[in-house]
Image (cartoon, rainbow, N blue to C red; front, side):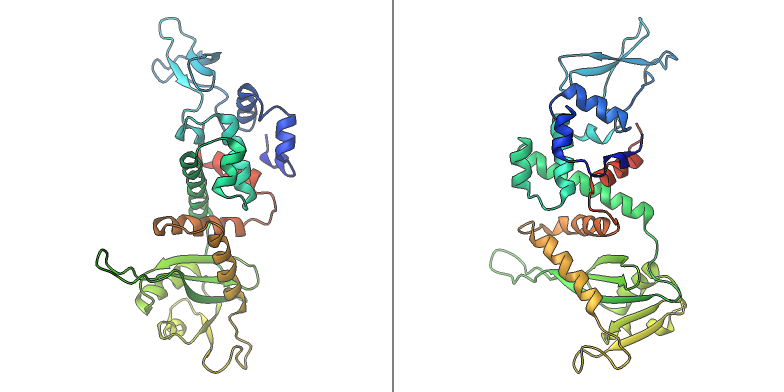
Length: 308
C-alpha cells in the first residue's frame, strides 16, 4: 500500500484511527504499510509453514512471531530487521516521534513532552532518522547542473574557531563547501578542513555535471576550474569591488542557501561537531523534496532501506 496515502494526515487523524492509542493498532498500521513484516519464515528450522503472530505479554509490544512447527516453537520479535529494532521504545510513541520530527520545527524538548520519552531516547531517534536521510541521499544523489545550467559555488563556516587555553588545544573553524543549481534548486554540501584547489576541485568534479556554467567569487582555489576536463564554463565576481559583475554573476542563490542552512542549525541551540554532517544531510534531504509533509517521505525512505 502506498505511503503517499498519508499526505495531509495529522496527529489527530492518527489518534482518531486508534494508531496512537493502541499498540495493537500501531502494529496493524505498520504492517499495512510494510514497515514491519507481514509474515515470517522461521530462521531456525526454515519451516515452510512459517511463523504465526501471537500475543505475548512478556514482550514490550505484546505480540511476537512463533514457529508453527510443534517441535520448534522458536519465537522472534515483530521488530526484527525493521527500523524499529533499534529501540524498545513503545511503537505508538515511535510513530508519534517520527511525525513530530517530520514537521521539522519541533525541538527535542517539545518532542519529549508530546511522546513522554526521555531526552536521551528522543536524541537517539532523531539521530536514527538523520541516518535514514544520509543513506537516502547516498542512494539517490546525482551531479547537479549540466548543459545550459548554472551552478553557484561558495564556502562558509558552520562552526567558529575556538582559541586554545591552558586546558585545551585550539579548535579550527569548520568549513562547508557547496553549490546550488540556479535553475533547479538542487544543491550539494561537503565538509572541508582546507579550502585549497586540491580539496575543492575534486568535489566540483564529483558534484557538478560536465558542461555546466559555474559562478563563483575569485578565491584562488577556483582558478583551475576552466581547465578541468569536464568542460565547465567559469564566470566570477570580485567581491572587493562589486556584488554583481558586469556579466551578471552574483552569489545571491548560494548565500541564501547558507542562510537557510544556518537558520536550521540555529534551531538546535548548538550542534556538536560530530553531528554536523548528519544535520547537513537532513537539510539537503528536506530541500530535495517538493512537499510540505515529510511524514510519508521519511516513512518511504525507511521502507526502502529496511526490507522486512
